[in-house]
Amino acid sequence: MKKFCLIVCLIAALSACQKKTDSAKMAASSSSSASTAAVAVEAGAATSTPSAENKVAPFDIQSVPVSTVKLPAYPYLDYPEKLEDGYRTDRKPRFDEVYLVVGKELRKVEGQLFVRNFPHTTVNMSALESQRNYENLIKSLGGVKVNQLMPADAEFKRLYPENNEILEKKMRVLGVNNGGANYQIFLVRTPQKNIWFGLSIYDDGRGTWLLTMEEKAFEQTVALTKAEAMAEGLQKAGEIALYLAFDTDSAVIKEESKPVVAEIAKLLNTDPSLRLKVEGHTDNQGSATHNKKLSESRAQAVVQALTAQGIEAKRLQAVGYGQDKPIDDNANEAGRSKNRRVMLVKAI
Image 1 (cartoon, rainbow, N blue to C red):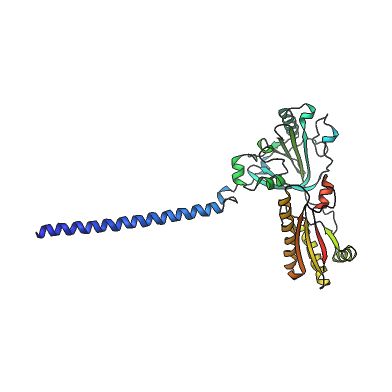
Image 2 (image 1 turned 90 degrees about the horizontal axis):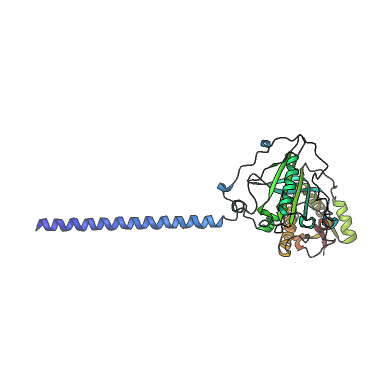
């Protein structure tokens, strides 16, 4: 009997141990599932920007041989000979920036930029014929293809998940998916400078996109608008237009425009009774909704820069009008550049 009781006790003890073990396993499993879920939520929240593992190493420009070919005049490449004048752009080369795919990196390059888009089909040229013509010309100048990705590639979209409209503006292409399927970037290194060429076929094989970027340092060509001149303009017209430089499709004020903001602060400090409405305006490139939001952000950036210099926020009002109030023709670049402005309007 005693032996039987001992066996029963042992069975009861083992059963209790098993229950504790099972409970511990269930708790650990639950904890692990919660951790996994937390990680999944965190990863989902970070999908709008590339994670650390998505970062790519910069392309080594020194790996491209220096070309000693005698170069023709800028922009180095011509239109097809029989292309009608109406398809030749009236835009002039200008100092600007563009984002180019170099290796797997989306690299910002500044210099003298010239972008052309034309229908090669109007001169009875196929997409392949246009592409091969320009590839051969660029290579004859010593050009080397340097992009390892195209904008339409899945890996590119993973690395650079910005929406297509923003990317198209930054990269100056006519379509990330359409024109990005055969996108090529070439580099010609000379002893004096780097010259970049972009080539792509867009519009279902009917058009050619051709970009020339001669890399060079910025040269100041506009004098600073002084506080006194601003005061005079406000006194006469009640408003003045300023052409501040911002990063592409961004509200970040570039370094070269910060002295102008300092002059606005000086103007406001000189006249403590002055109140200003800061208006942001854009050209008509892109959607009206996006342009309005961008113009508001840029006006707010100017206001924030002024308050950071000690100007009371109650003396300033930021408003964005987007493309709604042009002062020139948006049909050409000269007009569009005048429409991309910040207005200071004397407020009552």
